[in-house]
Length: 218
Image (tube, rainbow, N blue to C red):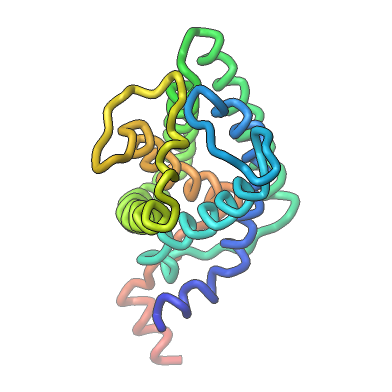
């Protein structure tokens, strides 16, 4: 019940996170195709309805995981203008960094990881309070994601074959490429922080004992 209540309170921002990740996914999927993965899609191509469904749910769930322990400590009311401008700035700078890494000879995954790390670090320097989102975001989403992978493997025996890219490191743990573990950690820590910045999320200051006493006397 507590989880459902939390999801209900954060439903608006979670939906926006899901939609945002869907919008980002076509170019990312096109770059990953063949070098990182080669999933089969109902309608073929490098992007499809499967990608949209996964990205929407991953964006929303990663946001809920990061904010689960801290929801009462943050306040945010997404303003369209502010959110769009901040996402645009982050996206343009990230695209420039990604292009720079690719031109420098980085593999596609390494370029994305470097870009995500650089972007997240920059936001944390500007807003250190977002650092508290890292641990719950990583622990909860990792547990959720790999449990989900386990279910998909049982339902679709050939599911893991999609990680057959030419740039994979080659190592596996529990049947899952090491690259995927690295990617998931980068995503579930970086994406919620990026969205918190876009939403201008701010931490609520705790009332001091003096303020509480003053309020009680009123």
